[in-house]
Length: 113
Length: 109
Image 1 (cartoon, chains in turn cyan, purple):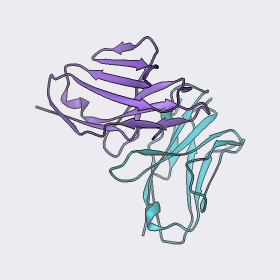
Image 2 (spheres, rainbow over the protein chains, first blue to last red; image 1 turned 45 degrees about the vertical axis):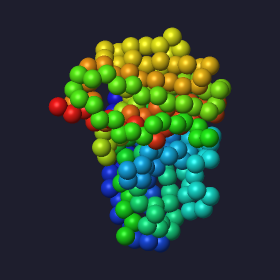
Image 3 (cartoon, chains in turn yellow, orange; image 1 turned 180 degrees about the horizontal axis):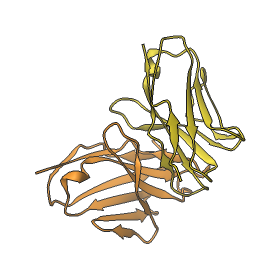
Image 4 (cartoon, chains in turn brown, purple; image 1 turned 90 degrees about the vertical axis):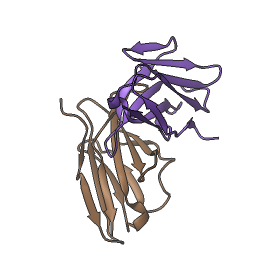
């Protein structure tokens, strides 16, 4: 059973481009969480999704950021018109049900130049 | 008040020392609690769940105090390999997981 898979591991984008980060949860996991971690800082919650539904997006910036978890395929975190301040590590985690522990992917490190 | 608060440290301790971390949470309706460990620039990994009655796993002991809304992690006989950032995690009533900012531990020879 493969772990949580995130790709790409590293992503470089120029200011104004779009970034798409993908997360394939562990098999049988229907809950997905996205977190952002700036250098030398803690994990900041962004969004919590279940299949086809956004449960809590209170941590998502109001503009340029969106997330989805379709019925088929990975969860996608999309950042439009990236700016330098978007440079960070983005971690995805999945869990099989509510109130159980979550398992993390290795993260995508986004660098905006 | 932040949803989950931790002392950021750093805690610098010698090998063999006992060290304890606390974490407070703001939502009294939270039901699930965990400690994760994060090594530099890597993904967080589950260290242990925290149960109401307290639980122990080798040198690690976790406790929950619902009345005061805090959880703790005790590490006995610290090893060099325990050096990491320890993250407190609380499930909100929405069942999304909120992380503390982490407590950095360095164990020195």
